[in-house]
Length: 181
Image 1 (cartoon, rainbow, N blue to C red):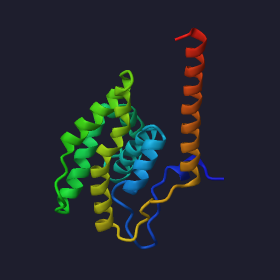
Image 2 (cartoon, helix red, strand yellow):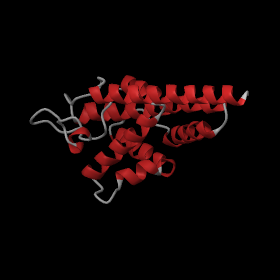
Image 3 (cartoon, rainbow, N blue to C red):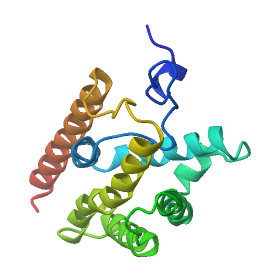
């Protein structure tokens, strides 16, 4: 059985090849996981990027803290990924605008319906960032695992998220009927 450290590892590079510079995940998988886990996967996405940053360059970084305080640290992460892209002369990434869009749509999840549905848009602000990360990984570590398939843990996470949402909806509906609202 895999221990916790094996779950959080970056997909290994083939022998003799460099490990990816940034967290590799396909845009499709990022979007699917973001939507079907009600954006919870995004905290893992931020954590994995910060964890790799810690391993590569900044050992004092606390990935868990930066993931929990994501509103303060999403722009610095986007900016770092943009810098990686700029070093390879990739299309400039509007890190500030993407961070602002992500923060606003994420905070809209705290509003009443129908505005809270904007939280489902948050994943779309991560796609350009991940596109640059994947391009950097392809240039720096050709042949790396692109992390483009749903694993058993991903499917389990999706099922738990959907079941939790269904139970919450049923409980709300039942309570509404009991109160006569």
